[in-house]
Amino acid sequence: MDNLVIKVANFSLDFPAIQQIRYLVFQLEQGVSAELEFDGNDEAADHLLAYLDGQPVGTTRIRRLDDRTAKVERVAVIEAARGFGIGKRLMVEAIAFLQNADVAEVHIHAQAAVNDFYQRLGFEPEGEVFVEAGIPHVKMKKLLMSQTGR
Image (tube, rainbow, N blue to C red; front, side, top):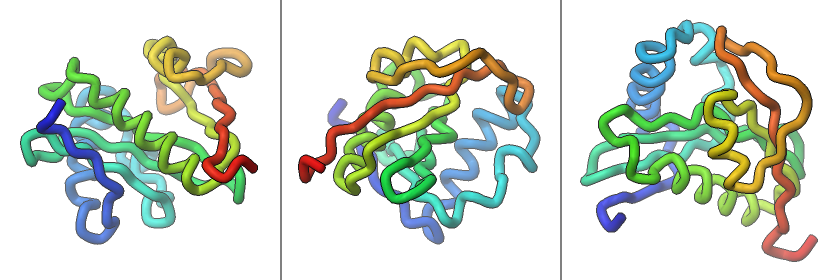
């Protein structure tokens, strides 16, 4: 998709767009409370922002758990932009971003309804379904090969 651009967000400049996308997807569509959605971890995280035809339409948050482990969270694409592979591109870019940073392992809490999407990206489920923010989720993990071979 030539008119899709994904960039690493500048938190101070881009957070309003990220916040709007997550508000539309998680709060309005899925009923997640603002307190759970905006949990105080955004400023210390990295964020990707997807633009379609110059408009922000998708985002994800990447949070380091330690030097070699990260968690990808808050993958969101607004309803009008779904069906174009933007979620997949966000995840591919997030994984590449983490590989370049020599992260060895990526964790996600996938909504159970879309865990097949993450399995197709190489994530493996771990444990039983659990409820987070009132939505069934599955813990998943992916091991990465670093760019430096470590």
